[in-house]
Image (tube, rainbow, N blue to C red; front, side, top):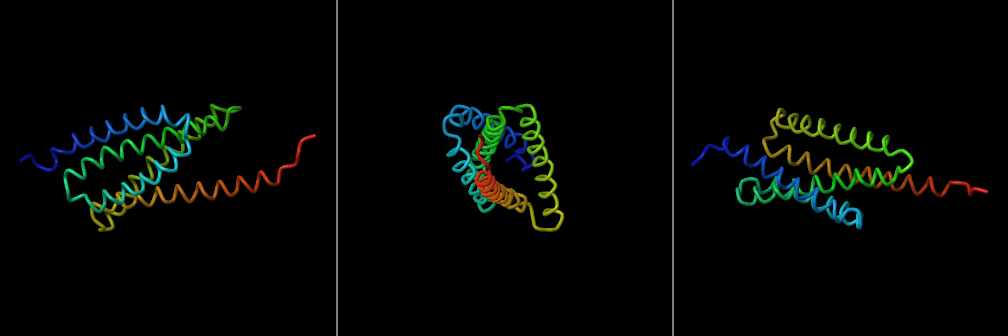
Length: 160
């Protein structure tokens, strides 16, 4: 039986295969139906992180969830970037820059927070709970942004 460390490259490759699948599928579906991809995919992503945290002791389940989380993460992420570009048609370069910066912030904050909970003694499943929490936070921010956007639209003055 191989050591647990020897599985790491294969598991990372499995996540990468999921990411490729997610971007490919979301690229086809996300343009036509971005709402279901973002809402359904985002909810499934959060649920998947919870399932991974709870089921990490079961290798087959873990491997299936690693692939699924790769697909969901990159499928939802690529759809978000596309929506940002569509929403800012007058400034696509600026929108692309902000979208890329936001994902890079996430790429830095996620591992930092995951390392912090491991360092605090919460165990090796704790970073997965951090991921679930970050998905919940993203939904909260999206809800707040939608509310603020509705208020701003209601205050606009008609053009003459």
